[in-house]
Image (cartoon, rainbow, N blue to C red; front, side):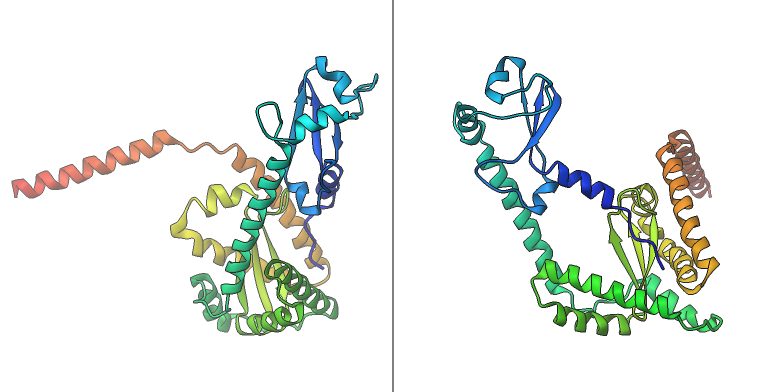
Length: 298
């Protein structure tokens, strides 16, 4: 069974700090809820920090241990409202929520425009064309089939939340989509996750590229001319991981995580050699000038 992104610990921290972060002299003391509104789940992605000087301890109800905040009514009034003497917290939170709704609507529009009939990526075409030269592979195990169906349900649920469309309708469209296209590429931010991971959706083999890994920014996105080739490379690795069974499946899963960690550290320390780049450009320029001089003399 394919491993899932380890986001639970990160999410637990985000939930614990879902509120206004109150700091005293730049040291965080407490996280409190606004008294004029209730923070929602998605508000955990937005952080608002209030930093005050020790002279204002009495207005923030700072305890002797300096580990808790109880803001008095007068300070709440000043923090909430806009104006010359106000903190403008109400407007700030509403603006951030409004921006979130705008982005959510943009995602809904993009998802609504997806018909599943777009031209396939060149890497997908290459994998489909080369499949005829591939040896016969045994059918997925019952556990792998259950996982594939579970993945399909999860993708349908996420897409339904974004678009607002009924999950049953999304599930039907998605099932048709994956039956027609056996290969697909998806991009997702998976903090601290592997640089790619394979995902089986019914009959489809999906390649998920992690945009949070330096592989994406320093290799994949930095070289547009070889993206299709990189996708083919990762498709081959993903395909093999999805097809093996037993101990081999465990091996690939564990190794992929190790590859990703090693690759992350190496890419983080990779510095482009500008000297070599400049030398190459100089040599190319000299060769070009030499050719022009020969043409003139001829």
